[in-house]
Image 1 (spheres, rainbow, N blue to C red):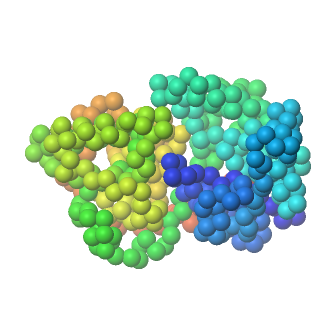
Image 2: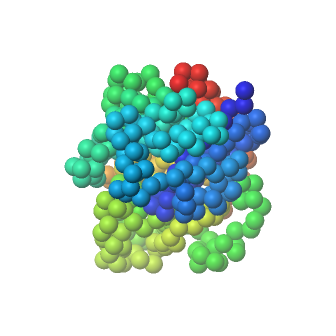
Image 3: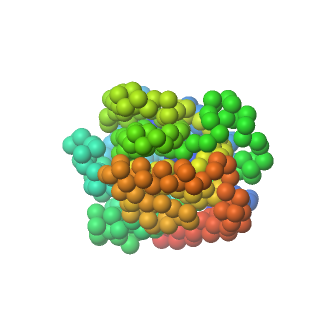
Length: 391
């Protein structure tokens, strides 16, 4: 029987990774299974951008479920079903009509008869960095994670680091967790187009270090900026290019604070913020960069590390468990709480590495990528089939 899977549309402007991750997963499944597997996206009616994303991701169709206005009779019925039965009737009806066998989404804390649920828990950041969250946010995450552990058919995590966290968090449901490290989707076009027009359009120098992280406080841009300051004091003027969403809903003042530091340290001219750019451009900038930098204090996985690996670019990484688990080639690790350590290692990489693609490392990456993508698709499909068989 043809396996049919629906995927909740993930991500928004503040969490670009959700879209990047989902597009990569669908691309891997489509490349491996073609039309042998039904791939659908699920979203509420009229969700902004869902139809365009469905087409771009190559889904068979976008399935839309109805949401009711608050305090109407249909809304009351749905709320009662969710609270008393842990059921989402609107989604159930759409899934049943299309013959969907498995539903994938973020923290699916409900049950759907005859539909296996594959629930993604990206990380347990609130356990490791509770200072990044309000008490209410921590309590909410604890509750939704507990319900997810109890109700999901299988829980998807990005790696063994998060699987161990899940095991400690929900030992009674530890057997549900499956570690599926995401493999990046790399279009061939990024190797074919010249880089000069992109650099000109974004007003970038030829040589730069690239930090493509959202400006969330735990991503630790402050340490990177301090390292730039230290290097300048030693006569080494590096160029650091940053891209990503410039906001953190938990710490809305953070972006302004770190930018103010650049002015105080007189290094505004060395740090270039280009905002959000297309994912293909992120990959092209990685190829051109001296290295990809991720100074984060915590990651459930750290997709920029795999993206750099997939295009054959060396990385300078904070020494945290998720980065060590990925173990990419040509990696340099530093203490995320020590800007001096980062400055020393960034300075060495800057001096020793020219701008542009590392052709040897890139060749190895391109040869390995099809097998990595195929293995990723097969591992996900195996978990989906297991969930359907046990759902």
